Image 1: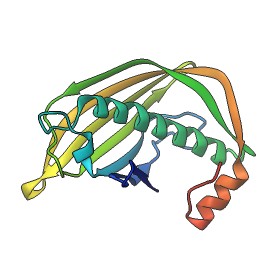
Image 2: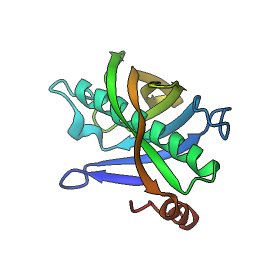
Image 3: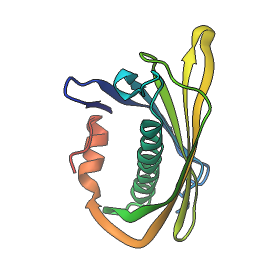
Length: 173
């Protein structure tokens, strides 16, 4: 799925790949990963021309939550549930360590991982990097994200999601 943002569609965020952890289908979630690609970084730079730290923190927060939601929905669908439950959650802790600045015009990659989900806590992490000349991967930042999960949450019928997957389209929820 692609996402355009900004008045002129300045950024393009795409899902590159998604992978479920070894526990897929067991009712447990952990080890799940979604890789994203972000193009059009110039609008997200700071005064020094590097990818803005606030933008990186937002990417860690938003994309690790997306990976968690996808893993939860996948578990519901594997279990044959007629609804996908989205447990209300809030950030308890968000930490980003910055290693290198991205350059304007460089494509940025984000690997968002669901490390472990327990009863009421979820441990998530992300790496933001780019690939420079010669295929060298440069780590821009690493983030850790702790989320609190509620006992229950909102439910969405599974049928529109299944139909969209079959048609290879983005679900309209």
